[in-house]
Length: 126
Image (cartoon, rainbow, N blue to C red; front, side, top):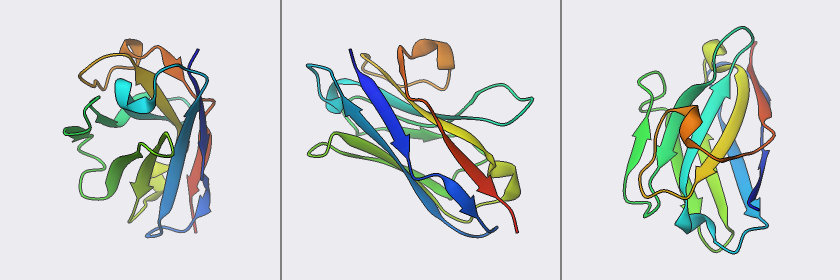
């Protein structure tokens, strides 16, 4: 059973940066067998897709609200996926989750993912 653990969240000022990590374990398959998604959920809001990466790693997608500011990447040797977040804004404040699915292509729909981490809080405030 794949287990995902996020880390790297915290409090940052507007304009600052954070790098979230999502470490995988417990599966016979390494993360390069999975499509990966990053999602976020702010209080009172639905969980929304932020970014995703296909199994091959050759294709990535971003929500319009984060394009040009966030970057998803994967380190196969560490079995870890990252979300680099730059130029952070107060509206980026949310709990961030990574998710994985044994699929070739990625999706911004939460229901398409079978495995989820516990989430990490990101707060952007002065």
